[in-house]
Length: 128
Image (cartoon, rainbow, N blue to C red; front, side, top):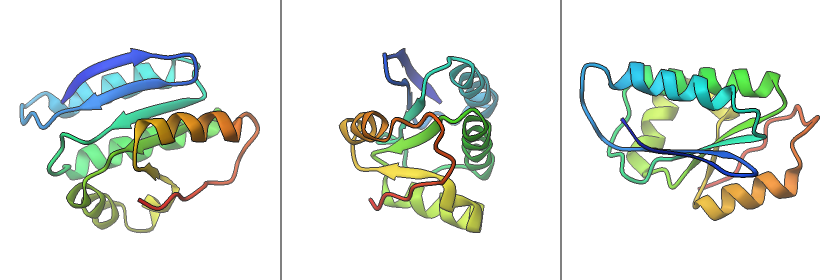
């Protein structure tokens, strides 16, 4: 499910691909855990290649957001296709409100820089 992971000064980037393997969600969980431990103020997840998202993957993303929130960092989902956004909202119901969705990686980086998330505790919703 992960095709790329890269460490940047302002964030940790994970790019997801639509791989339906028996270990895809375990792989996603491991990469998200590593990203959470990176100490970066944001984890950016590029979703542009996804066509859908499993319920387990949606909950893994939400759980990562919760871990990062406790550390005053954020998970930002970038370039989320409509079907994936719908799957997130359907699976997570009201919990999805704490996930940040932005149109591009540039927007995610700008949001990270502009917000200076250290000490921020309120979720910010960004329309796609």
